[in-house]
Length: 263
Length: 271
Image 1: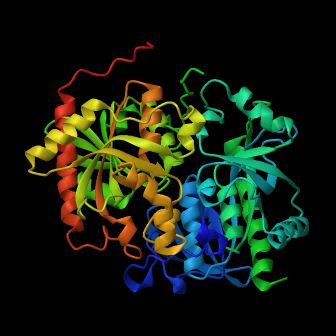
Image 2: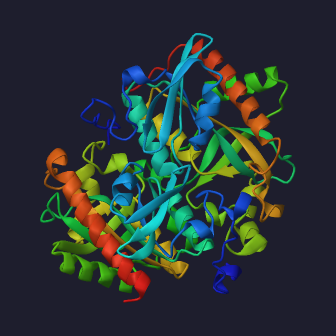
Image 3: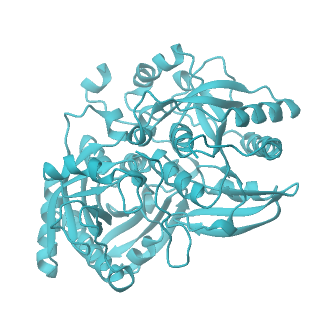
């Protein structure tokens, strides 16, 4: 661990042709100072449509990148795939090309019975019940949102009149173990977390927060709660999903613009 | 816990994440991590056609020597692979062969070699959430044997043995933190333990496949340079021989599927 103690968290960019980083397939001229991230590749269209301008830069593995303008500042949006492994790569390579500010939008499952499907949820921090960050640092280190980014999200929600709930999330790697379609034993698995006040579950945010903060980047997240694993309630996808997701996207974009402008 | 997840479909009756149903896939599947590789594999199919692109991952289905086959990318990492295995099982998949790349952990394995995994070090977290580490991540023996036989027929000498799977690419790769010394610090114990190469998907593929039952899973990898002395260079994809080697790996994998197709289907002892 000698290297880590010297604070040498500095990975080596894996450049391909035109200085494009190996997995994202883009270079420093193709990314804005801040980026909206999302897991689902289909959602990126919805996000870039809210931009004032957006040009597709690359579609490489699970990474689709658009760069343009949003809320009058240069901004990118990019997909990061499912789970912490591709998320960790995204954070590392965004840093390699000079993008230091990021807000993820996406969906999560609630376990707090009071957190209703359709709510907008802002994870303040997340339990690191995943594999990627454990390889970086032991569990004593917290996965916590960048303070300024978190505050910008809360302020933006207020300005846009969107009600948000914040809380401690839990990130894990086994979607089919804790989801509406899981194997036996969901209640046994979520109860210990619910009992200590964890409010929701996702698959990426702990890696986003912990690795961003280790690398001294700024990260936040805004989620739409789709289902509640404790009460068994789900949102009406057809009726509500697009509208709620759009709200989450707008909050994230306004907040990211503030962070980029240093407000 | 009984390993039986709920078959969750979308409004079109397709599996929620992979966007496919029973009619969309062949029972034997090739699973690269990289979507770009699917189209190349499809060129070896008869009547191969793109059936779906879900979350960026394409699926092509056709036949190979009359045998129903598909190629579908899983995306990177154990979490994504576990989701694919679950949903493919629901729609009738029987054989899952990961065809990917890996970094070598052994100085004596030449660049561009093929590694066939007999098992994987469970350095990932997804499989741990399914069952504790005492349970082994092993490839199906028939897939291992079929891949070995296919290699032999193509005059290729593969390396067969244990590989390592894990969740954090930028800790054990040519671009890892801590420079060459940092990489060595993290990989030396696996080199000393005789682990052949390192990648990010197989431990979840093997563990989840055997827990769900009725699935034959295996892995063949094109392997780049030894990570201990190739810091800074992604040796596989930058090599001019790379496309040819991937093509050869595809032919080997398809020949293995042909062999496996001749076997009786697996029986799950729990059923």
